[in-house]
Amino acid sequence: MTLKGYLQILDQTKPFYVNLTGYGEPLLNQEILEMIKESKKRGIYVNMSSNFTLLSQSEAVKLAQTGIDLVKLSLDAAKAETYRKIRGADLFELVVKHASNFSEIAHRIGRPAFQMVYTLQRDNLPEIEGIVRLAKTINVDYLFVKPLLVGNLSSNEGLLIGNLERDTASKHLRQASRLSKELKVNTNLSSLVSHVSTEWDRHVTGKYNSSSTCTLPFYSCYISSEGGIRICCNADSAEYDLGNVYDDGFQNVWNGEEYRSLRVKFRERIRPYNICDSCDIPSSFSARPDGLITKAVWSIIKSL
Ligand code: SF4
Image (cartoon, rainbow, N blue to C red; front, side, top):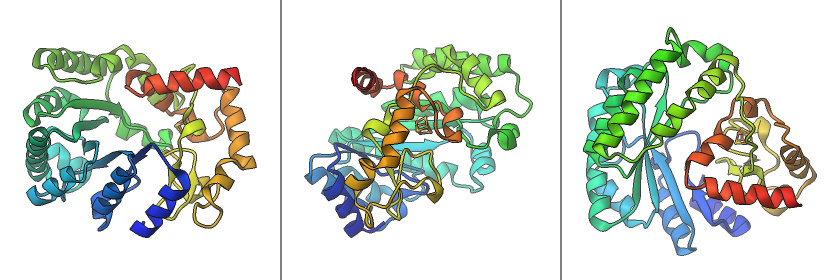
């Protein structure tokens, strides 16, 4: 996406909140810092995830100075060996070094908030206590642990669960949660511990057994680098495009027939896409600060 295209999107959507994360590393975009600065000039809250491979000391200073509000380090290993296995590259030490530098800069200048996001899967679950320790060492403000979400669960079951037992998974999470309390690491681990059964069943059955409904389509959308407007970031291909921000105009698509009929389904607690079946986003929101927004939006939707 170009800066010019991004500014067109801002002008059309006038957002309060932008997450500059899609399917890829945002720091590969040569104009990303300008995009953040332009967003901040407009008073928008900006959040971005990165794998931190490109965030050298000088780039970290530039990123922190853009005024960005929240930066998330996407990391899924506490050991170099596991990192190599999952990511296919020998960059663990470099990422930890970049993250430590960035944390020091962010705490020194007082912004942005710095979060670590750990995506749980079979290969990294046993080292979850290690990630709590690493979060403490790097001094992140928050450690968010989320089970891997993949659309086609049946073909990825080995990756997700492999030969793990539910009790083993539960034990690791409980130990990590206890450790986070001892080390005073802010995290959602205790919430995850209390939902182990639900999460486990989701991976085994491919369905998320939760009564929570999704409110995202009422106040949020995902726009791809080509301008495709989609219901959320889990809609991972152009087949989910409801229109194009450049060709059709945001307002036309947002208020169009197709979007409106999808919202009606969500209001009636029908999940319209297959990707919604195993999605934990509606539930995970209750464990996050934006859970308050979800509750408020749902009470408005119900009253319509
Ligand atoms: S339930 Fe999940 S996949 Fe479906 S629209 Fe909501 S966030 Fe997207």
